[in-house]
Length: 128
Image 1 (tube, rainbow, N blue to C red):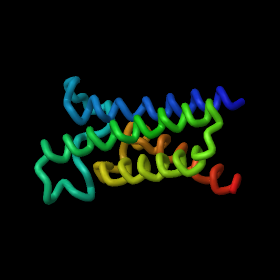
Image 2: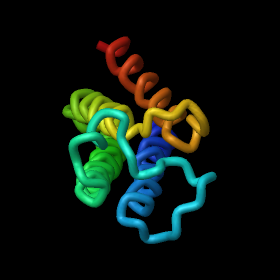
Image 3: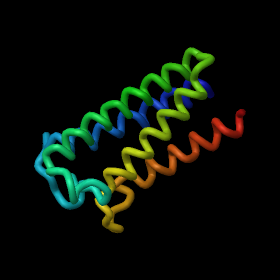
Image 4: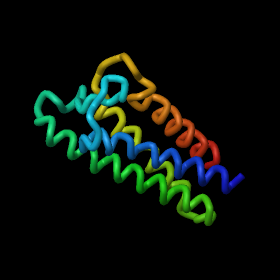
């Protein structure tokens, strides 16, 4: 079970790389891809290029944090509960801050990732 959980957490982290691809515009944007490069919270006072760069870096950090968390689960590290909880909070904040504010295509914009983060946080809290 530990191995499956570790793999799941690593894969969850790797999904954040899609937002890195979109942030740095490594593929031509299509409307059905999800994130538009805008933020309901900061687009009004930050140039889009700056916003995209910051988002890209933060999504890379989220990816790395979850990969480390997955490795921590594999090795049964004593620090894993705190680290994975922090990773889930960080990822959730990044997803919320960089949501474009539009209600459509929520799955592509990270709502499932946000739900996974909430489940991770709940599990850690319940484990004590």
